[in-house]
View 1: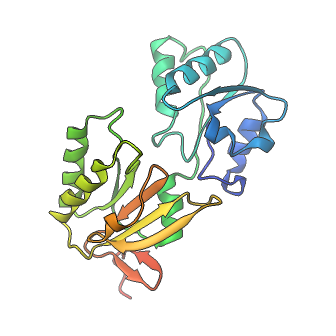
View 2 (view 1 turned 135 degrees about the horizontal axis):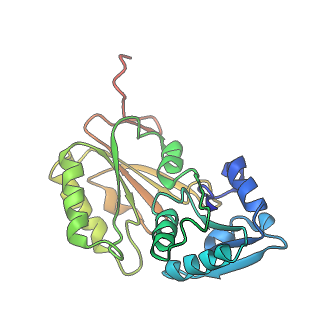
Length: 241
């Protein structure tokens, strides 16, 4: 079971995800994600690995499943959106386990929609989600995708916008956006949506870099019709109001 935990608190964990974890005596995950569900882990065998050790984690989970155990491997958000679902399926196919192991993906509320809810309705029209992390994707490809999404007037959602070592990517992304979007284009910054230290800021493209941004921040860059209505960021769907 590849299970999406949603954005944080167990109140946004789906009943299906809760049932999947409850039914598995073995639970695998990154420590930060396992810390979100301590009440669901009592009495279970835990497979825990750190950041960048996703392949090792999935290998251990698949080995236990191939040996006959019911295993849940968890991701925050949705496991099919920058999560573990694709890696598990790729590794199972490589190792010839797809017929031996029944793999089910349990969806969760992903960061883009969770953070959007805190801003209001920024994703009411077409949007693109792009990660600025170049750990697994060449930066040149990320730049081309940013350029294409901005030129097509998508609302653009940026995951992993900055880290302690990666500070230039968000600056470059903003420069690319400014080639196609007005400086006063609304921008929303949501950090840790639905977690204890949540913060939300609505600003614009011109002033984006004046606000702190890190790996826990989701950045929303509006399209040409996105508006700020009081404290809400709204992209009209096209209804006559």
